[in-house]
Length: 444
Image 1 (tube, rainbow, N blue to C red):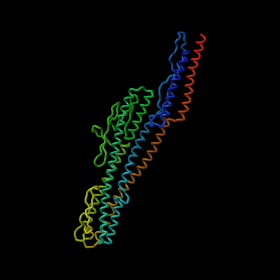
Image 2 (image 1 turned 60 degrees about the horizontal axis):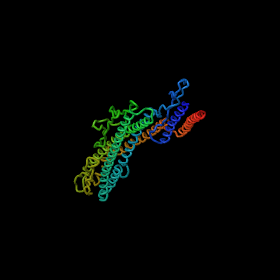
Image 3 (image 1 turned 135 degrees about the vertical axis):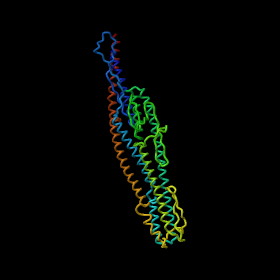
């Protein structure tokens, strides 16, 4: 009779645990990083005999919980980390390259169209070189181009600063995840595999690894009790319960440098959000350098053109612009009478007639600016296509993982009904055993 009590009790305990796992699944159906739980039960071989003449081959021990299982696939988990890494890089580059294109401003207030307007004013002035109002307009358009260089330089610098700020935030996230992973490793080494607590630690471990992978191209390996070891280009960042933080430095030219907190230099990340930020920072630094080169060429070309002309007073044309970078570019001449519009032979608009050959055409600032805008547009277009592809691949890999690890509420509901019936049946065994024992006692 005692067997019935033990068997019934073991069934109610086992199915109660199984129903608790389903309840956990249902309550965490929308929790990011949660892997579905299930309970494995096995036949209990423990003897419950107390009678000296008990026949051993009639021994029934009921059931017991072998462990709590966590639905996961290491290959699918690694695939999601890889696609998330690529997506993080593409999104970071797309975001900041879009801001870079905006900063370069190819609108009516940008360098290109302001320069075109300047040349149009010079053409009008060539038709009437003595018109003071046209001279004033021409000087103003030259000043506007200089201001356009100033504004574009300031806007690109702001983009560089924004990239550096996001880079610092990414590094802070990385360091938090490294510390969390070290703590999780320490807990995993002390936890009992096959328990609910152990499964929860594995969820936290995978979540930290996913965050790290989304930010930089780390290398992951697993050790005792599923603890994770993380390295980056040969440098160990997490081993056991020890974590090594990383640090980011923004250089004067807008590029970024990565190292350990102790100053050890690391190579630039190739992927992940931080890798995308490094790439974007390099691109913006190139754009700023190209802009400064164009600004210096603009100063040289315009001053040389003006120097070959003659003013109304018979003097050589003075420098119209000063500065060696886009940020320092400024107009010098404000007096319309100081414009050197004549040629050396005394033609009133002689110098203006050389604008097309001296300041426009192949190799000119105007043409080089157009090429720079086209180069940026091409890069942005290819990055958009890459981001769309990366997003699609990531969605596919996440869906594949969710098919294994995700919670299907319909399936959980069906399992819950099945387990409720099994639980009720086990409880019925206890009730039958009790009623039988009561009947025996009443007979006695």
